[in-house]
Length: 204
Image: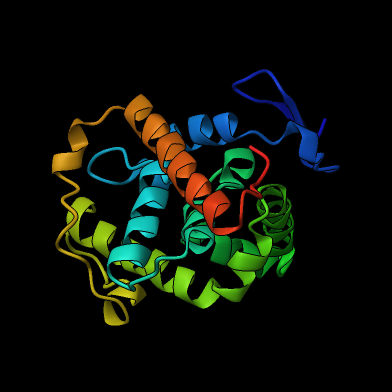
């Protein structure tokens, strides 16, 4: 079978990608329980926490104020609610065996999820800035919650970790806190987007 049962009881088919099964509640729930780094961080770091960090970095460090762009940053990994989070080393190893098959599949799911929330265009036109924020978050995670030692990561030479985010202090938050924070941030930004667009919003 190619379908999965989501947290809300919806059926999401990874082959057909029906938009009617895409739900913000599922995305927030799944991402809040999906650990980054295959669980290798010094404490659980969820994709939901990471996504909120990317959104905050884009706003605070890059000066982005447009709510639709901040929403695209928040939702850049939303597809991982359905595909899971594959680590970068595993992606690179996978490419050696299957060329870009995973990349093409993941991109297809990502675009379908972003399209559902009317975020595909903001994502595409601001992908470089969102990627910068994503890599800055990666550098921050490397500095604050990963084991020291080993070869340096490529991102350490290209992006500087932010110091105004304290990931050790954030360890006090439970997974359901991150789920609610993700939902709240989406609601806040989507409301701002509706105001900016004259009342036209996205499907939630």
